Length: 565
Image (cartoon, rainbow, N blue to C red; front, side, top):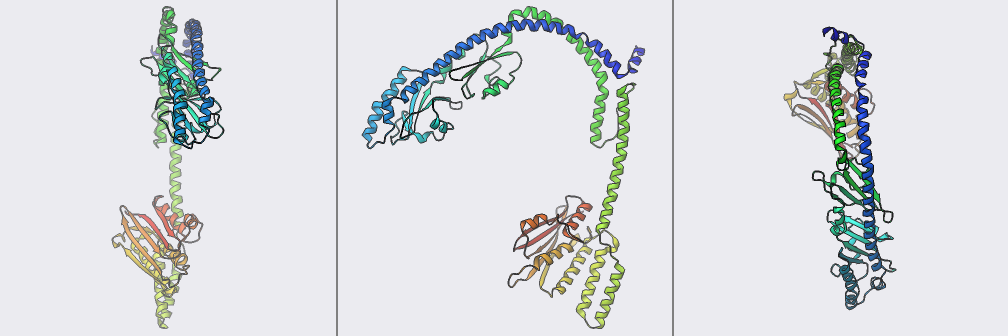
């Protein structure tokens, strides 16, 4: 036994397939038995189809007769000269209307109803000034809410309407009048019209009747466990395209006169019951072969497919970033080589992803460093110190003040080359910049602030508030030409749940929608807004950054969102 297993494990995959094919050679026996069964059933089916078609032809003939009879009735009424004359004129008195209702409409319609029990009511919808009269006479506008109203006004011949929700079955016809539009409807008894089709066969069946528009008018199923809805859809094409399931025969017959269709389903078991004894013997042999084949198939497929299933599970784990390959094979076939190759590929993929991730982190750090301004701070500080000294000697206090503010501004801005700083230093930088701008603009604007100093120890990126303040002054306040206008800037630093929100609000000229939509995507130089937004996203993540709200003529609010930790 062990020798046989070892021999099988050492076979090539192609040899294993050859063994399976040898076992599957038993299938012709099954095919022969199936052929005998199919041929027997085919003969019985052919005979039953002939019987069903004969019954269907009789049913279609009966349906044609019924439809023709009803169309003849409504056509006779529609072309009645007295009725046409009564609905094609304008009435000047109630007495004329009374005579028309009693002598024409009531008498003729009631007589027709008395002669034809399948008719539940006749109604004439008229455009004349006749008053509504019971169910016999109504205004044409009463039909305007129905989906078939427009069709009724343009139809050249009678047509049927069936409302499944209300159960109304109507025959509709437009009267051939010259002056007014008049529509006649005959309400037909739905049960009377189709009662015979519920007794079409003595045994189980399902029947559906579709009108010339392909809509389901009547359906009935005598199967206790299969309602008509399992077989028939509202549209004929959908029913013909629908597979009602095995075990049923379906036949369709069409009316050449009216275009209606009758569809019948019959169970195969009633058709083939006479051959059950012969078929049972064949099916027993086939079942024995199938059971044997199933057993062998399960054993062999499990042996062959199990490594591939484990390999597929490992692929799913790799998609979840788990690069450990757990599948192994003791065989020496092509599948074992595939598993080995997959193991090597997973290891190489893990190494490559790790290398790419390391490179990406290095690239992001490099971009952050490149985005930080790099100027020579010592030369700048020396120049500002000299200006401050000269200003003091000359008694120029304003020049001295602005030099000191510039020195503070650039010391906090450059931050000794570091990318991050405390929020307190970033705020000190912003205040220095505001003082410088106020002196440069001769105190032409005001600024205020509301700052939560408990957040000052939080870390931030250098130079993110100052560009927003600069934008508010240069592009907001500076371009507002209102009379007696005083520019105002308000800065707010507060905590919002786990985040820090820094807002810069101005009462400047505001922005139009196009500028607002593109302000964070526009290419800018230096410390532009898009630059600041990109730095924040690179350092903290894509959920952080800058957002804008603006209204032309009212001002702009820029908000920075940072993590609060």
